[in-house]
Length: 248
Ligand code: FPP
Image (tube, helix red, strand yellow):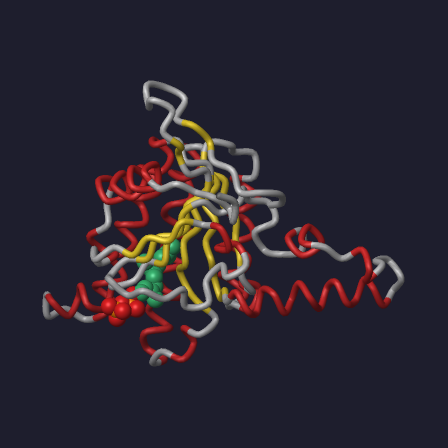
């Protein structure tokens, strides 16, 4: 990603309403959804996977180019061991069961975060899933796994310093693009819209650099209840907002 954020325009009878090219979602509220139903937290995460499936389908149908989902943060390791194990189990299940359908629907899977630190079988499955869908172009789905924006920036700075030390990069020539090209999101369009569900109003270390000019939306819906209508509401609200990028 580089340059000023830009938005596509609805190609059909959308009346020229700007459609976000790249939408990112902090999928929050699984635990509260389960608690309201007197169910274990894992039931909320399972229902969260159903919402992931619905949202990917809706994003493709709406014509969004890229959807980034915060599935596991670098801070989530601090959760109880049992919940971390449950989330890893769901991830294993998801990659094995859903990848064929994602592939059929033209989804290209991308990953952001330090996901290579997951268990070797998960890393192998993720690599295979990315390779299998690499030729797809309908929708990029970037899943954030062991992701933290500060960690992403640390890794980018380390890469830049290593290149500078090796004499491959002139420190005086470092600009915004130098950094963007070393972020995990480098193959994705600029971020237009960032949604957080469940009523919390924080970025929680998600896409801090990329959110510089993104529209932020905090919705009360708990993630397992998120659906096509909720995504359409967010897209319609995006079209109503005036983006100025620091200009007038
Ligand atoms: C936040 O809810 C959600 C998570 C930490 C995990 C998100 C994971 C999924 C939606 C399922 C796995 C996804 C894939 C792609 C396999 P929370 O537990 O923090 O909810 P709470 O704030 O109500 O407790």
